[in-house]
Image (tube, rainbow, N blue to C red; front, side):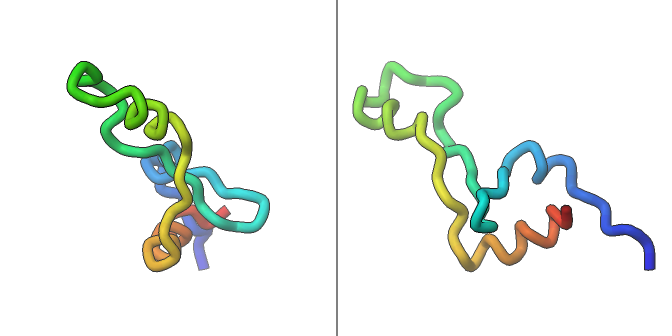
Length: 64
């Protein structure tokens, strides 16, 4: 069986934690900041954990 290839787009978007969960960046944090509140922009800086139902599919893209 050939080696499983890593999806490069997924590798750039997700990082695995020590426990095996996937971390992701939040959307909406690249431009148009004048219409967003200070509180909202501060919360967008923090990383989020991928939901369990989605993580199963994402892990298939990241075999390493």
